[in-house]
Image (spheres, helix red, strand yellow):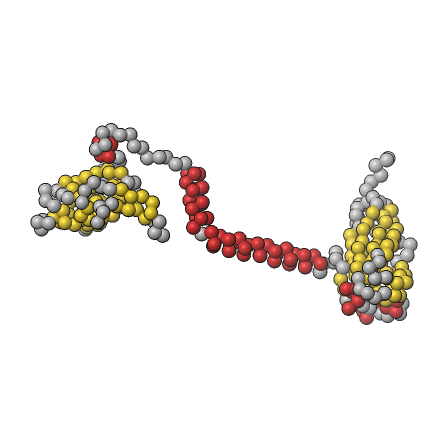
Length: 296
């Protein structure tokens, strides 16, 4: 034995060591919950020393060499020290409830050397403990980060899918939907608006004999042509249409949605009942509120 006491964490990392200055017979942990005292008894020869926070705070001298000690509860007393000497004698000492343990004994035995315990602020302790936790659990924290990132991407994907399936996005009802790309922009402050429709065929085929049909609230808006003919759509060649829309309700400031359907010519309402119509693309967009005349 090297007569050195080592302190380790629960994970086996050494944090401190010191030499009592003699042959160590045995050691015993010390704890007193009412005052939150936690320390270590060290038996050196016929002397029992108590260390708290690596400092010597008290000592008990015995007439004979101490064989072993035990600290704990006995009967109604919760802090009792049992001392057994090599001669076979047994002694029982009770811890005083009014006892105050500090580093006076340490200062006395070191010629008044000013050794003070460093006071660390609470925020600094929290920062240090957080840093140690991140260092020791780096793999787990990284896995949790990856999981949260995946859940965030999943939430964004679901929200985007819900947006795409809402009434404000384009919906396709046939296999030709993927061949038509539609983009709608509303320009103007009112009461006259310009609806710019950009369309193109995304595949290597030319779409022919298409019509655009608009459905809207007749009390809010008016259009010159509710049906527009499209002779053909060329592949990867955008085609633009400008449709004027006039707002009627200027005083109330109401606004509504306009639904645009792209369908083949033989599916017009005059030829096929609405229940059997299958438009290629349905696109709904919301009209802005008319601005007041700021020149008045």
